[in-house]
Image (cartoon, rainbow, N blue to C red; front, side, top):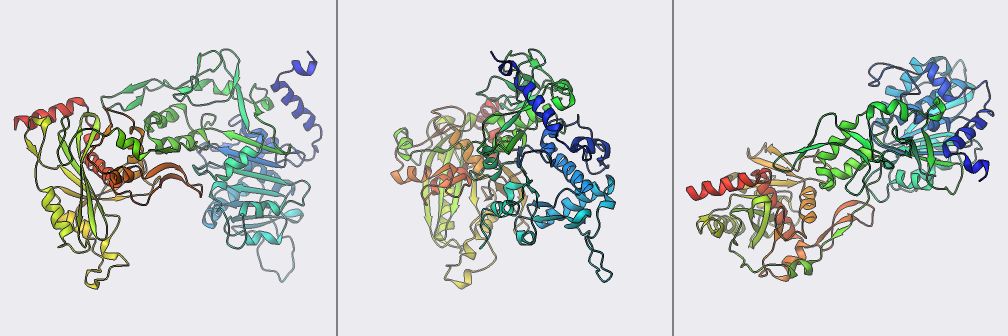
Length: 636
């Protein structure tokens, strides 16, 4: 074995860093040394005010030193979790550049309002509190010149250098100059294309292509989109991971979260209530080593996270070879950051129902793991649903369930209704699908009158010994307002009134309006109760994507918790509509629920029927609650 082969990767990295250090102009210190002596973080700007300490976030040191003029690195990409501290490292490099007049700096962010906030809330503080105020001065000093060299978004620096902060939608301003230090922050927020200009990322990079010592920084949390810019930029680099040793066996690894398919990583001890909801046993978050299966703990981070630049064992290791050796990319997760703790991360995982809540889990992967969530394309085939349908007649409640809810979908010329019978564990039997025709913009239409008359009846329930019960609740989709339909011919029916909500308000003992909200805007709640200002009735904002997640996660379950049963008597079109959507990525890169077929009414109606059951709180019941309810009905 050669000497080179016997040296481990960490030692080689250390040797490379030492050799690079020999080329640095001693008049221009390292960014770490400048920041250690000059970077002050005032109270209010950070949770940890005071002088910047390199050992606080040691994983930033290599990243920020890439931006030193003596570094050969040209493009530095960072895909990161929230609260990673990366912007602090980049700001250190900005302050270093201002101090020594090294670069024309271009800082691009999502929009101009955010640019103003970032400039006044971070860059101005950097200048004012780090001894840089004297470095900001007009490039020219003509007596008649009144323009300032220090505005919110534009600053002139001594030695003829400039700093400009702008947005991806306002990049016309940057074309007047060449920039040799370009920062693209929140890169995932950059639009796919600018009108008559093209790709903003490519346009921005082009402003520095002719510069020999160009420095480009791309940083962002990822998105769920298949066209996520930061994910593509990370993949085009060398995909560096921060390697830390296990305090028990010394085996190197980068920090990961323990999912169901991974036997190592961050985890904790969990308590589960009767509903199956988990909570973390306080203080039990810990990390299982992938090499020795033993645990180590967060209080040991100061030792195993310290990097080789500070005399520690940790180092950045590339996972692949990039096309351009000057391109480096880094992955930072919340598990590395001192700005959050491991207990919080494990608790976030539990809030995602340990990965079962797809929307919450996607957010967990983005915000805590700092990675692009893999697209789980799931498609249900209508003929498979029909093949496993069961022998119970439509319009009759089958044996087993004993609570009935409904979901109604409103259209211009009809209201469609699906009725569902529920049993313990929210096991569902769909047993009826009705269509009530009529002009829904008219409150006196046969559509509304016939719907009300039909739902006023009782149903024979075998699971309750043959007694009859009524429908407990029907959720009516009010997202579509028939009175504001552009094709409505009867001008007398045109108004600001939403007949669907008006109908529910008049018949609030059974009917309740719901309104679907866009995926990702539910703040973690599938249902959010509101009081309608106009009608005075309750209504519910409903995350229909989250409900579909639950339905299709369990669509292959034949019985038990969250299983869904179908009658063989439903026609083919019923099953085609139920299987009309898939979860995945569309042709524009948007990840979510997308239609395969335009007709999806039976699926929508069942989503609302489940929402009606959740409004009643049945999804929170354990088996004892269901049995108690059944016994109460039988006693009455």
